[in-house]
Amino acid sequence: MKKQHKSFVVIGGGTGTFSVLNGLKKFTDHVTAVVSMADSGGSARKERDEWGLLPSSDIRKSLLALADVSAKDSLILRRLFEYRFAKGRGLSGMTFGNLFLVALSNIVDSQTKAIEMASELLRIKGKVLPVTLEKTDLVAHYNNGQIITGEHNIDDPKQKDFPRITKFYTKPQAFVYSQVKKEIETADVIIIGPGGFYTTVIANLVINGVTEAIIKNRGKKIYILNLMTEYGQTYKFTAATFIRQLDKYLPVNVLDYVLINNAPISQDILKRYKRTYAEPVFNDLTGKWPFKVVSADLLSEKIVIKEKGDRLKRSLIRHSPEKIAQICLNLAN
Image (cartoon, rainbow, N blue to C red; front, side):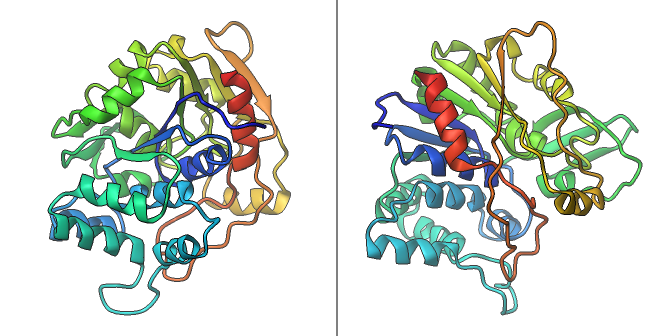
């Protein structure tokens, strides 16, 4: 497929956005990653509480996804950015890339400037932008009356009574970064997800001004459903449940396409997921919807191996960057 001239905005963060960006960069340089700034687990706690900065993990992942790996020096720098310390008091679990971004932010006295400079060093194909420049926390209200604050606490809940989130917002209220607002409003294609439904996807939509910018956009809008449900966020969700919950934060009648995986997942992987009460997202998007449902093989064949020193819970399977990119590019045209 030849290089595309359409502009893409990918809204999300984490490994889901990494897969989408990693696929798109092979076909276009006109891609902007808009990532959540609500991370509060792992190294983000230090960055926020001790160093007074916005969390940089999702920024780092998106930079790596868009990085040019054709040149030898870029490849080495990319490997450095990926390197995770497995030893050392205070360093274990942190990545070199996060520390680099923290140091660079302090040197130039600007986190946005540091991201721009890191983008140049990694020769990324596109842009990476934080959804907001304001420090904020996610707040979730549950149907059992509980209220939990903080992305990490919501993502890895301690309660075991299978509650559902009924209300989700930021505290204090945060406003969209002006450059992000402009990119969203003018993009030819907006891709939302996949990723932790509340802590990655909705975390961007509850930033004041993001939903309004998506609605104002006249381009095509694609929502990519998760491969699996997740305890604490989407336990027992079907595809229709995801859509009904999304509609609370973004009117789904603005969507043109919804993508869902139809490739089978191995029994071994399913058994491992069952221990955490997770299961494949069932496609019950039958009948009339204001968007077209695209059911396809979106599954990556690569086995996910957890890095040494990584203390956070990670998914076992991922979306295929190549399959996602091909479908999104076809829909864009």
